[in-house]
Length: 314
Length: 235
Image 1 (cartoon, each protein chain N blue to C red):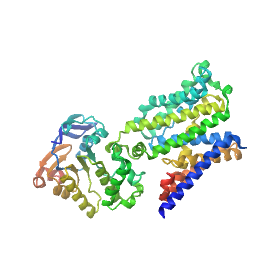
Image 2 (cartoon, helix red, strand yellow):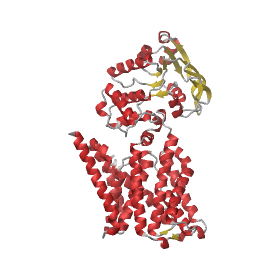
Image 3 (cartoon, each protein chain N blue to C red):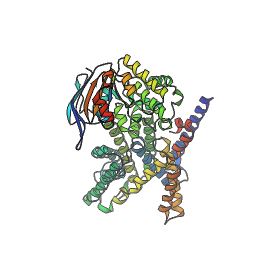
Image 4 (cartoon, chains in turn orange, blue):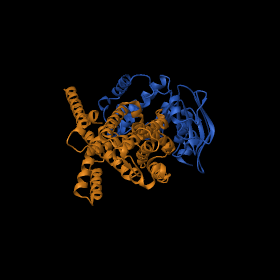
């Protein structure tokens, strides 16, 4: 009987998953706003990749926007200044993000709020550096336009693929030995070390992975919007929303950041539409209420209430 | 000798927590390490397992210098430990907790999970395999830490206060398990304030006070040693 229930649940998950993939794949041909769905997929990707370093490993990178911002600029510069095709520029952006993660890697020795503050400072330093690069390279405060490369349908499908790959990576990670090691580090890194887990190496792998995805996402988003500048590429709202969406859904779970990003993105959009001036304040009140009543996020709260769902949702 | 510690000194600022300590631990023995609070027992364990880097001295395990090595390297060399307060992975399931020490194993996950389930059945916790660590009681957390140690299967075990806050039935089980594992070839350093347990289980006892070794010997000698009585009760 229990087997049938579990199999039934898995079947439901698969049906929902396939239906969602088919729907998202068909969006550019349907009478719905593909830009709205594009950004929903973007936030699912950002929240899921943020989940790798915070939800799984316990490191809160307040400067997470650095990887996204670098991705936007590397893509734009390699396309507009060096003549690379956009897909190649996006892949190079991913590589640049990983390189940046290695440069920031020594900060992983810090923990808690110290890591968060230093990481935030690194992101701000990068923003200042890019904003002050010669205008002929990085466009200065005006940024760079990519209007000649504008192909929203292509960029939509790139984001679609990135989102699926990201969710797949998070799923594989959650069932892998590396995933167990990361969660051990998150819960108690000294106990993890005492169990023979190479904390430095495992967290570096997570960090590089968590840097790769937003860098590519930044490149795709730059292509989709066709314009970038330092203020939007390094906006703290990128980090904030990644944190809030992932937390709201449930950190350290596979489905949490997806549920959180979908729900909060729709809520955010509704609030923008109804409260164009006070939107941030109203959103803030919602976030405070959600953290108070669902400290483990939606998925975390559900699995705590019904542990048998853990195998399906977490 | 399995473990040799020579002239080990660990300082925290001006405080000398471990002061020129000398230890020799033979294979397949249980060595009690006792002393009043603040005498340096846990600091000594932390030096042995690599959490602290000592300022002076050497630590040899199986004739290999291990001081300066990272804790995970020392663990993989065969030294396992438990903590004063159980340090289980609280947001992970019990099975995942037990997988933690065998992540480098070449055995497939399914075999490791089977082995973990066997151990859980031995301590009547098999039905809790999918529960999270923070859903366990204090006693169950102690048991989980013990089972995790069995999964880890180190040659040498540093036990830090294994009997504190433990029900007498569970304590008796731990006694039997320590003796059973010793028979199987394991070596123990047992830190505990439960002197009856230490006297019962240990072949040799080392007494620390203010970071220094003030006495060492067989339990029957240590029991009546004036320096030990003085360290515990004062003059």
